[in-house]
Picture: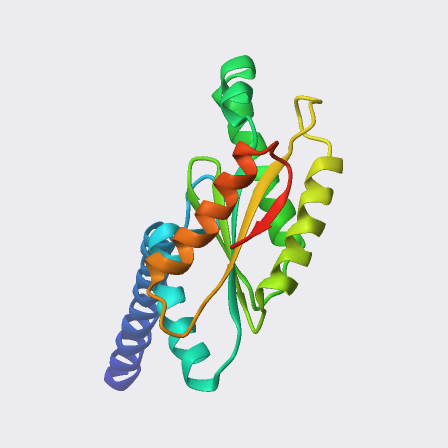
Length: 192
């Protein structure tokens, strides 16, 4: 009888420990997601993409692989927010990110850079192939229905990592290419 009581206590203790471990792992996962993902779109945030870029940059340099970046900005997004409100603007951002995510490879990294700006980091991809993807995404976005029944377009800047680049270099070239598109009619792709 005494042995069965001890065994019961041990089993009960193990069940409680298992439940506590499970609860802690769930909390850790939530903390990790909060640190690495954009809360609205549930894609990577700027901080996480910077960490990923550093790893992929080392890999690209070591193995002499291509690495490219697409900088994307939704055209006239302020008008959407001002005309239809921020709730609808949030829906546009969510759908926009879903379209991007659905149309990239599993080996690519999508992040919300800020506001209505997004970045796709493409491993094993040179700038001309990245530009082809950007053209495809541009067309898909322009043809996709959004909740406010207005056409959404985006401007795309593409840049390829050069082996002596710092993060700021390749990001700045892609950003400059995207702004060039913004200043010259929008809804297009430019490589720098």
